[in-house]
Amino acid sequence: MTKESTLSPEAAVYRKIVPAGDYWMEVVRKGQIFRIVDLEGNQAADTLFYSAADPAERYSAVDTIREQRNVYLSVGTKLISTQGNPMLEIVADTVGRHDTLGGACATESNTVRYALEKKCMHACRDSWMLAVAENEQFGLTKRDITHNINFFMNVPVTPDGGLTFADGVSGPGKYVEMRAEMDVIVLISNCPQLNNPCNDYNPTPIEVLVWDRA
Ligand SMILES: [Zn+2]
Image 1: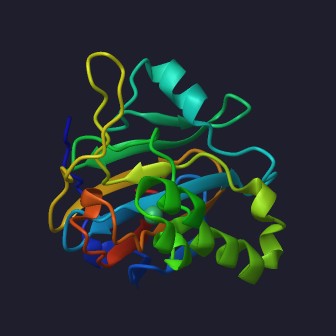
Image 2 (image 1 turned 45 degrees about the horizontal axis):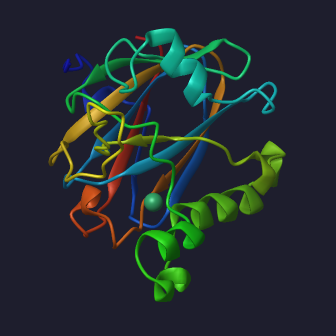
């Protein structure tokens, strides 16, 4: 399902381009609207959410899937925390669906999925670990890195329940937009992955925009 936003980029209170391989870690306040734009298409934005008031409460893939009875995330999806609270709601989406089953790329999984010599290649988990180390004010450590959302990524589930990593369903300029239902710490790794068809083997920048309460 897709739905366009009514918000204009000129009215945003914050805009930032995040290159592939970089991270974005900021607090989005309750009521603010937050958009991620897939500037060139087929990118993956591997994203974690924590409650800013108590980061022990964080995004839960299993609670989100169970509550909406669907494995894909799109317009109307409430992103549910480990304590059963809605953290954000997807309010606009021009892609149609996003993955929360595939997990993030890591140097270890790269060696299993692709080849042993991929071990030294930069992965999303490295970007997250750098982010928590460089942002001590949030009180997070690498132990807090948990299941995530892969915005723009296409991981179709087959009729018999298999997971497949497929070419992206996103495209240049497509975006997903969420309204925060609590103050949230958002941690995005803009995926540096060079081995996965989800980003067409070509990692590209994303843009993050934030609007105050509409
Ligand atoms: Zn990645």
